[in-house]
Image 1: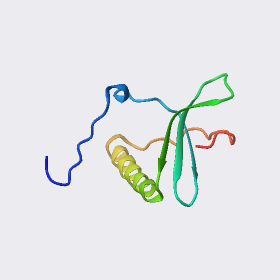
Image 2: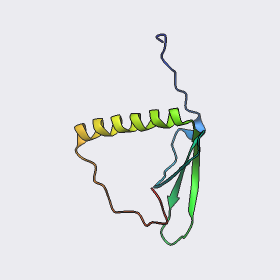
Image 3: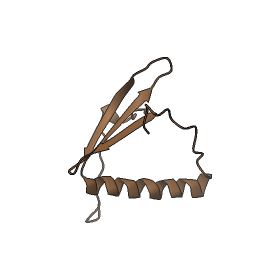
Amino acid sequence: MKQGQIKITVPEALSLGIYANFASIVHNFAEFVLDFGRIVPGREDVQVVARLVMTPVHAKQLLRALSENVAIYEHNFGEIPQGPSAPSEFPM
């Protein structure tokens, strides 16, 4: 491994990933909290399946990385449609 490279290890329990079709973001001066969950038809609640807490610097790095990856994806596969607007009680 070259100097400066990071080796990413995914534990077996996380290797299949977790599906989420909902995201909520809140912040204060010191951190951003990202909740990921599932909206299930017929239920009024959203089950949070993962919560990430990060510094503002890391949140901005995540924003940049997502923007770059969406641009690469759209370059290779075409524009991603916006999809329908979410109801106001389910912020995305």
